[in-house]
Length: 355
Image (tube, rainbow, N blue to C red):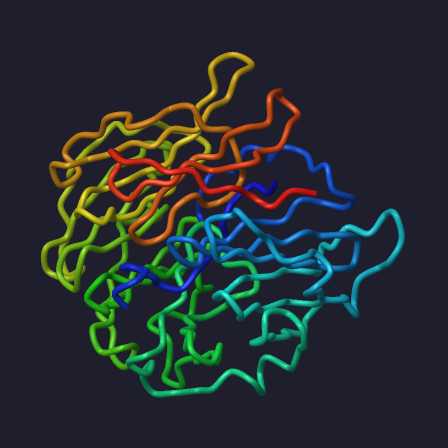
């Protein structure tokens, strides 16, 4: 029933190992409370979140949405949230880090669950500081909104344990995004307003190569094929959007495509076949739709792979996957499924949680 994705660890990719425009509003909920977010955690698995006043409720699936756990099986009761009908949840943020691992920011405190939301502990004490992420830990993907996550994290899928880096970050600006490439390299951005720093690590977070876009430009999205080849969407002071490519791990960038649409929402990822997949949302009169664009020529051109999605205010990509929301039946209706693709050619349906 819900509207989008926040973040997930790298899963295939899933199986192999900020400064942007204001998003369009989400469709309204039919469950009591406010809609949360759907998180894709694997090819057939995901987690839904509902915000019910000062309570977060979590439901999960492992079979492509055919069955879901009960909404009351996993919950978080906020301790620093004003109860009652006017509860805004303004100080309550959450991030699904994996199938069993959830992070909550509760009015200045971070709480972590590694057992599917059944129990919670202090995140500062529970997250393990390491010099480099362990080989079995999956860096947590984050694009557009990192919510409760304020630094690069990685999750061990077998235990749900979470790791953070003990070394100095590549930038003192706020953490903005993380993209884990298929070869294990980590690409991140840090930024606020128009100030942006990009960084890449090939040794699990020990050392970093950094770069800064020209003055007046900010990075909307950063993705990578491997440790050398990456792409970034850059927005200028005039709103113009440009795609740039690097072949040397971020040391130098060249313009690949100019004049991209100045739309309210851009998501970007690398497909399973190496293609670039982008999600955009466009408005034509009173109608708004979401589209999947695909590039198979290193970003020199894009074509519409599918254009019948419901507009949402959430990220609709993870490494190797992109999707559109569908269903509903009216402008105020919620989505009840998504159509998922790895390459812009083959699509399959993933059912969302129902009331």
